[in-house]
Image (cartoon, rainbow, N blue to C red; front, side):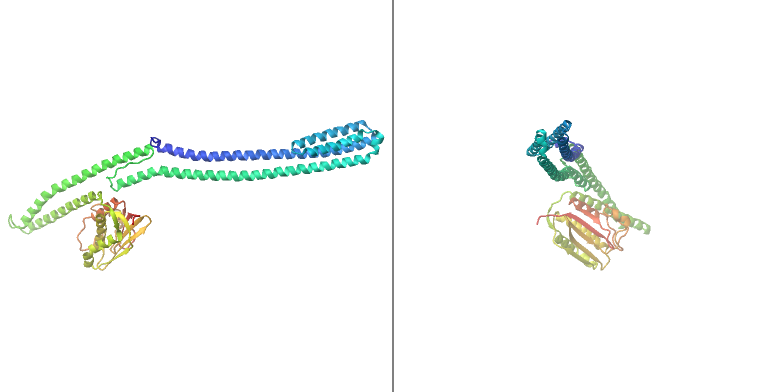
Length: 475
């Protein structure tokens, strides 16, 4: 069994944040380790360079002290000067040992020791012979000085080589660290994207389910996969859908029952009023005839309202049962206009139909009814000789059907209520029968059942209604 259904949305969110944080923390820690390693090597190289420089300086100083002590010894024949020469030689050898540990080639060390040994040999010869070997002693010290210069140069060369190696390592470390940081950021962004898509998908299903409930699509079961709490929310929404469907069914049954029960006494009432007006029960005077006329008008109005209620209830029920198939909207719009050609000609209206072919999945009869109601509404409110514009537009993943008339438009106070059942706006056409107020409500029910939207645009001067339907990729 998958672990996901047992984990809550909050736990998944925490896991996502911890995963991204751990990745960035690992990259940061690795960067710190790299920087510390390079700094340690830099400090070590600097310490070695300082130690080597100091050793070269000591070697040079000891060589000068050796030469001074040797020459004074030859002149003064003082044993302490010979001891000073020996001590300076040992100090120089110690400096060489330190340089050798720092990378000085052994042959340079041996050459210095050989030169120092030749000087010591000259000093240890008999006094008369040693004093006569002053030139050989000078040659030995010049050789020692040359060796010191070579040692200093080699030390500098080794320092430069270490610095160059360290510089390359620093550059390589910088590039590696940059790659690691960029890689960590890229992986973190990818993880964030994956988690956001993964976590937002159940939420989108919840939103679609709620939209379906709002659009009264109560025949579609709600089953939302995802974390435990989201699945529980899906089950709660499905329970709500079931209760709403039952309430909707009870409401429809109640309306049918009440309407049926009212129609029988209402028919009897109309028949009685008709008999009174015909004088079956005796001739009526003027006042009585006026009362009978008022009764007849109100019974007709009541019967019309009951029929409207039944029609709206039937439309709501039919909206839940769509027979979808591929529909070409431009041709459907033209057919609806042709069906109402007589009403258009009676009011001398100019109807323009525009737009190109557009396909979608829809119930053609119910969609034609919705478009027909909008067109009928536009014909009713347009002045004689006016213009009605009908068009099919493609907008992203949707198709738009717009119907615009040249009438007085919708009052601001009515804009938010035009799709309510049995609501009639304040701007009604003159010398026209008052509408039932269910035409736009039926349009709203049919379009919502198709997963679309119907809206009243703010463009003037007339009223412009827009139907938005999902796009179909099938051709």
